[in-house]
Image (cartoon, rainbow, N blue to C red):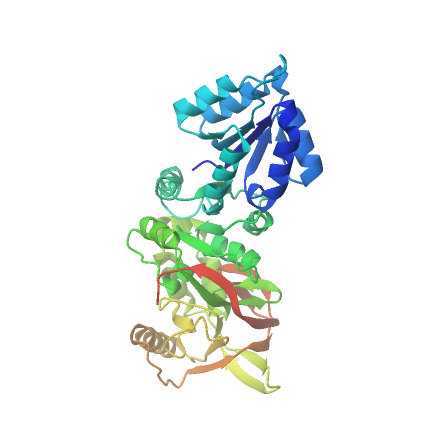
Length: 423
């Protein structure tokens, strides 16, 4: 469904349309607004709404609005008409009435019908889709067309594309400022994490349409891997919200996990070229190659209760949420994403055989959701921790290398609202 409202009024109705816009400012602020020059100037100056001002009615502003209707950009036209004393230079309502009739667009010509349109729109959710066109291995244009086909009949959908120099978090922040009802992230875990980070504490539901390589957060929430776009859109339209934990690592938002050592090296080695060619297998291939190269490093962990723990480790994973395929996060058999705690798993294998044995045991525990014991795996839960290593180790957060140790990680209980299947 289009996401623009056009505003126009004859001179005698300028006060009425300004008062209408002031009354419905929270609703109108969720839409792109266009108006003829004088009407737009008054609405903008007297209500604070952002209005895109077209030409004056006498100079063809009404024709510009009609053209927007023809191109399918308009959800409604509010044209307050003076029936008896229309000035010769004022726009002709018949032009826009005819175009709206042909293209089946709602048009109000008096305050009563304007109020009816406002009431109807107030019940329609406005969703902002933040779309990463380079995620995954599918055809981005075809996938976007499918998303639009599934969502636009039910939502007012604004689409924003990520690109070089345009951070998904910035797009999400801009969407929050427009009082969006839903913000949807479509891409890989990096895109989802960036958008989710902007939404922490906002209460605005996050919808996820997974199109990445691993799609770990979507899998953690129970979004099916089969027909992921169709299933994800159905979940969004079902509007079932869940409150889950979020976290921050050195101030950066984290919805999945932080990996130190082996995990970070695996992500770094699984290049874009390798992921484009092999998909999720790229991580397994990179991880297998690294088993012979991983070495022990000294680790000190301080927890919220003031206790200090010292280990020698090859891999440390601090997880807020993780699917079973994130094997190194499964020190307890599952990662609980709404318990207000971080899952900390420390792997201490001395050789390749120990590493393979530990990972197989953790994967089996994740599939069965059972706790297990292994001589080379230590697990604990905490709300906050500070971790340092010697020598410094690379750190990956939600699939992106962010620097090196030391790090400080804090759970934000109930920090994120998501659209997800019912548990």
